[in-house]
Image 1 (spheres, rainbow, N blue to C red):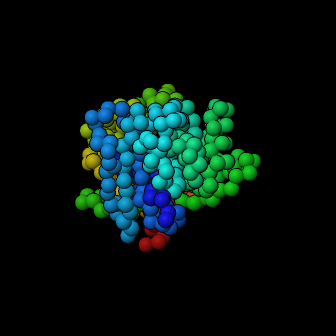
Image 2 (cartoon, rainbow, N blue to C red):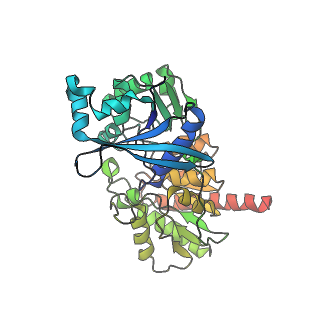
Image 3 (cartoon, rainbow, N blue to C red):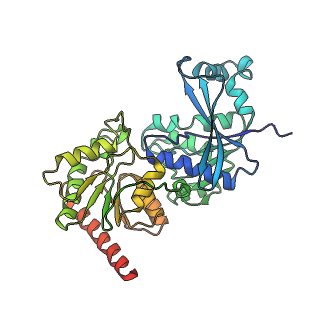
Length: 386
């Protein structure tokens, strides 16, 4: 009798403030149910906590998640930090821990790494934090599936060595772009190019009025605050660029909607909150004609639906752009890392983006002209199609 009951998805959180991360979770459930979960195992998520009174650590939270036409069983396990410490550092007691008991019943571990977190672009601490479940899989010799994501880049050689060990261990590697292809080939590691996980997440209809000629604009709180971890100080002229883009469409009497993609509706993280940044930009406008702020606490599937209603979309968050691309909305990306180039190029959108990393004031005009060029191109194509 098969004793395996679960497959673990790293970092799974369907209610993450970052709607892109949540989209990866929805997509991962669907993707794994189609391609890797032939035995109808229960999806599992490990949540470490320190306060023993905060969670009921005797049993996990169970749910049935609807993902398109699929219904997938999901169980969240709360693992006390003390339990994990014993598992890791007290071998004689390790097998009696809750951590060990869960892993014993795990058929495989699937790693999302935030979609772009298998890299040190956000710093070594973030890279390491996302390897928790991956390291458990390697320690217990559990098969590891690297879900579709961008791999690299790595600034620190020791981080690359860590990545190399993991990639050599993985039983299956999926990538969403070819930016790391040469490295993978040099490591003699096989991989498969496929769509981003958010492709598999189905949109959920929202009762909202969007004009037929409207443009959607996603403002990144990460770039707007200019104070996020290793990317701090790289976006000095981002607010001015966003304001210029808004005014560009105002002058042409085209409605423009500001839509957040990574935000906590109740407790904003000042260095990374799109809603906070959108509100500040909106409030700073002397003329708000034809500018609309979507001030709603939308889920990831709902956000995908709203983005699908735009005539053209300009996004800074990668998964905001993915939502537009997968819903066949013409898109232009404001790229804050090299992941945009690989992802856009692989989807036949070479050039449909501009780097905003360390731009100067003189670069703003060039970027706005490029946005306008791709907007006009998209509108002309739509006119021909109609």
